Length: 167
Image (cartoon, rainbow, N blue to C red; front, side, top):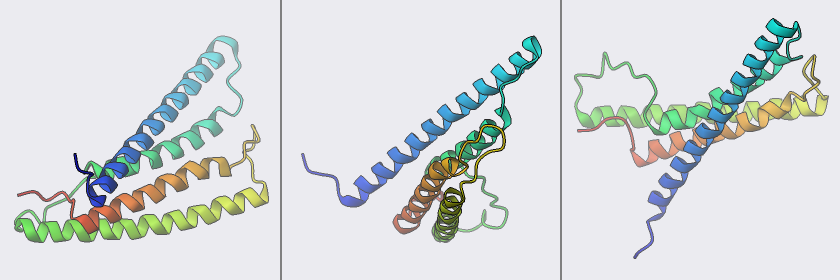
């Protein structure tokens, strides 16, 4: 049995990472839902919601959204408006898909850089949430990782030509 070529191994590794991040995002979303339900029940039955529930939901939702982005890209789950490209042939559409993936990679890399700088600044400033005192930068760590993975996935798709256009 021969080893897979590096591009195939890289594609499988990116796919596994994107799926792992999506599963992690799903787990965070379930936790956010549990906190919300517990807080609503606590408020309704005992007149005592979970203190800082909205802070946890805010951070959890941000982490969740970013965790799903690499998976959405690698599975071609993004919304595509093909009004102007529908009549094009497969090759021009494939070229445009590669261009779009390259642009997304650049934007995701820019986001990663700026989010990382923002997280470092928040950490050095000691910025915390108002009620629970949770360090805000904790939410930035998984978001930066998700954004970096999105950049890597999009760049790989741009280089490999693994785009939406199929014959």
